[in-house]
Length: 293
Image (tube, rainbow, N blue to C red; front, side, top):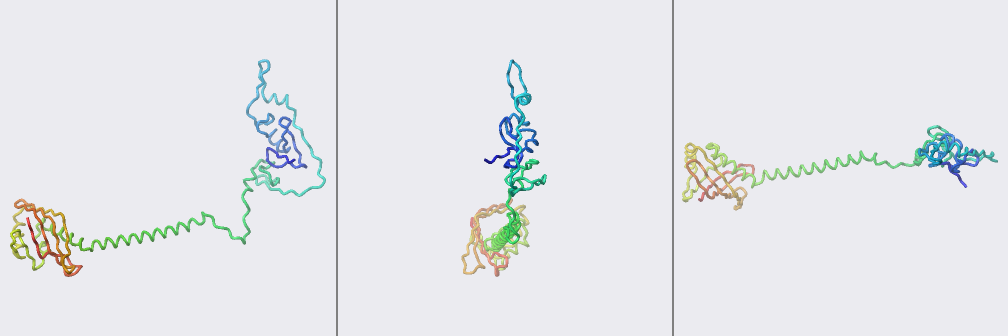
């Protein structure tokens, strides 16, 4: 029957010197037993590392467990094996710490107690001619580089898409028309007669609420007088609607609610403008203006 030393966890060979603990009857390698200073079996009274004490109550006196072991437990039995008839080849492993030989199945070195399985638990590397698969840590830089390139491509495409949409928005008819109306209202409120003229075509006509048509020259005279005599002018517009009602993209109609407020005159009604531009890159200009209260 194969016997295992509880200290080094290796097989006790028939040609090895061994010791049997008289208390627990567990066999050890003699060098393991001597190195530990006694039995290595957990809980054995002959184990010098045993921390608990055994108390025996006899005539109201207590006896220490070490004294009990010295008096009651005889020394271990040392078994000296007879020399083997023929030495057999046994595969061994070398302890990395003390460099001494141990049985190949040993868990701990029987000479110094080093954990042998920590050193020999990994399989040997394949021969040089067998390719070794790259570990995940070696592939990580490649994966990160590919991920970075994909992210950069996605960001570039997204940025280009956003740019094209923004560019198309700023060049769209609706945006350019609304921007022209906002600038025209701001110039009107600032009473800038010179800049106001740039928003009108040479054939501009204004149709007042009474249906009377006013040409460009008369309209500019009226505006110049109001700019000189009105202290402040505030104009608010809302509900802007753009109608592409002509056969060409250079002519359209804009309708919105207008609230004109100044220190001398107030008016609320519907303003209709006809806008024209010769080329898409040109500024929209007003050639007809209608107001209905």
